[in-house]
Length: 184
Image 1 (cartoon, rainbow, N blue to C red):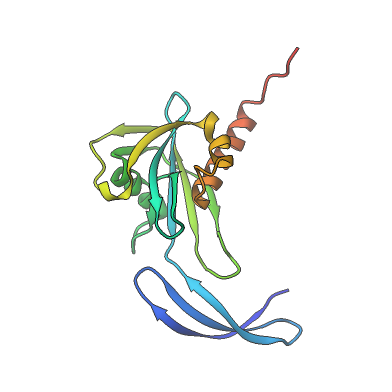
Image 2 (image 1 turned 30 degrees about the horizontal axis):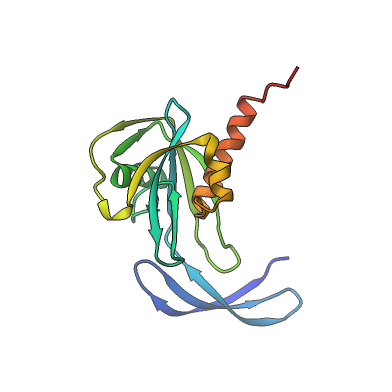
């Protein structure tokens, strides 16, 4: 069933977030103001090396007071494609320039209240170009073995939605390409 949107009233606007009330009506005629958070598009990127390790940043998120490993990522700048934003963010946050990016996943993380769109890319080649340009983004940059990712998720050392979704999609994709050998 599709809801009818009669209008929207902005409560707060900034370059990073808009808060609005949407005048919505369900098909049964019930009508009310529904909170809506509008966010710019964002990206994440999984850079994987030949040793099957993924490039990640160790950082603190003050909003949840959480330390965790995350894929490099951030906002898509006005006029920039998500693919170009992913390459830029990887280089700025890690010092590694990814090559031959392809889309890994697309998600709408909290579709019931926000219009946020997130693209996640995969690069299986990258070259080191120097220290991260955005040194304040993380405490460490490291190569995390992909085989350790499920346990890091279980131990809440990878908790960001883009990172969890992207890494799990990568693991699923790899399992399809390289099915497990059955024990004889």
